[in-house]
Image (cartoon, rainbow, N blue to C red; front, side, top):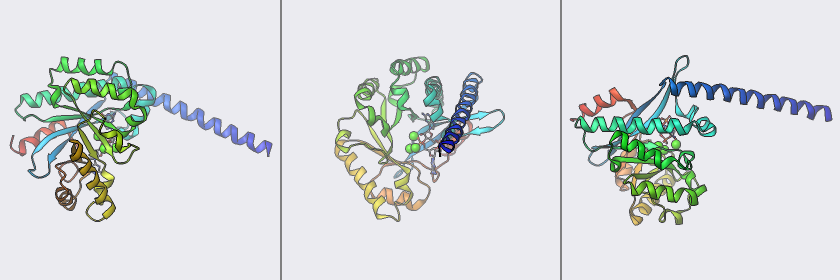
Length: 277
Ligand code: C2E
Ligand code: CA
Ligand code: CA
Ligand code: CA
């Protein structure tokens, strides 16, 4: 038995070693990628699902690795968070989003709101607000057209995060709670939070047209939002039936493959022009 557990330990150790080696390799590759401009953004349009007007777009990061091709954020964001690389990467994402949105505004695409995903790790960084202010100054972007999407994981550290969100909102920036309903947000806290929008998680949208429980959850979120004066957007809309159900339940905004996949900037521009701008 003793021998056995020793072996297990050795195997376990070996695994850990390999893991940290792998992590270091990826970390270095990301650092290099950041220096060599391998990251890029796609933009997914957001709609008023009643008027079908485009109201804005969500910026989503991708990594174009020279050997591996395009890597989705699900494969590198958590490592970027763990290593702290999310701080410089996040600043690049914010800057790129504001610069691009400003350019589109100047091309006459209207007052589109650009939404940028922000990790809790970024919000916890003491320099985050300064970073945002710097980006706004350098790009000349109107803060009222900037929305930051944060996840419910902010609820784990509300004492630290709430004042940050307040400062961001005092700059005119909007705050949206992403993946709403999946985390551990206590509803009683919601009304005290300095936020503007709840983003209904795609998992509830998925079967809203055929599952009473999902429908009930979405309705509850919409009611809650209306009562305390928040906007609601549904994500992950893939089919017409979902749009119809969401409209009936009083949801105003939505995004998803039904309308458009996330698009590279050239394709996004074409898409907007095809819609009449
Ligand atoms: P998220 O913020 O919840 O983004 C929504 C994800 O769903 C995106 O995946 C989007 O491409 C995908 N999606 C959009 N419409 C549909 C649909 O109709 N059906 C389905 N099945 N999926 C749809 P993506 O781009 O792979 O991003 C995954 C996650 O990575 C994001 O989830 C977000 O948490 C994170 N992420 C992406 N970009 C950034 C970023 O710039 N910064 C940070 N911190 N995180 C990011
Ligand atoms: Ca998001
Ligand atoms: Ca989401
Ligand atoms: Ca998500």
